Length: 174
Image (cartoon, helix red, strand yellow):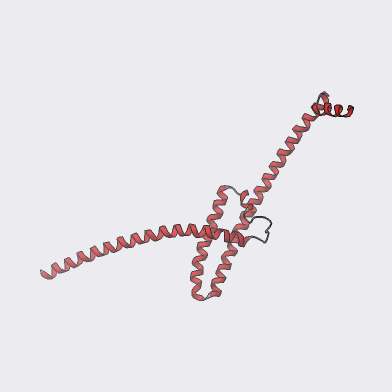
C-alpha cells in the first residue's frame, strides 16, 4: 500500500509539473508570437524603403516611390504586405543559408531582392495604367471644358456685346 501511495503521489506531482510547464511554454510562445508580429511589422517597415531604393532603376530625378501615389490604397497595402512577406522569407532563408557561408547568404539576398523587384515591377505597371487612365480622363475633361468654353465665346461674339470686344474697341480709340 505504501508503494501505491508513493506512485500516486509521484504521478500527481508529475501531472502538476507538466501542467505548469505547458502553461509556461504556452505563455512564452504567445509572447514570442506577439514580439515576432511586432518585430515583423517593424522589420517590414524598415526594409520597405531599402527595397524601394534598391529597386529604383537609377532615376534619381524622381522620388523612388512617387509612382505609388497612382495606386489605390488597397494596392499600396497589398504591395507592402507582399514586400513584408518577402522580407520575412528572405530573412529566414538567409539565416538557413548562413550555415553554408557568406556566399550562400548573399545569393539568397540577391534572389529575394530580385523577387521584390518583380513584385514592384508588377505594381509599377498597375500604377502606370492608373496614371494613363487618369490622364485620359483628365484629357477628356479638358476637351469638354474647351468645348464648353468655345461655345460660350462664340455665343458672346455672335451677340456682339462681349466684354472682350468692348475693351478692345475702347483701347483702340484712346
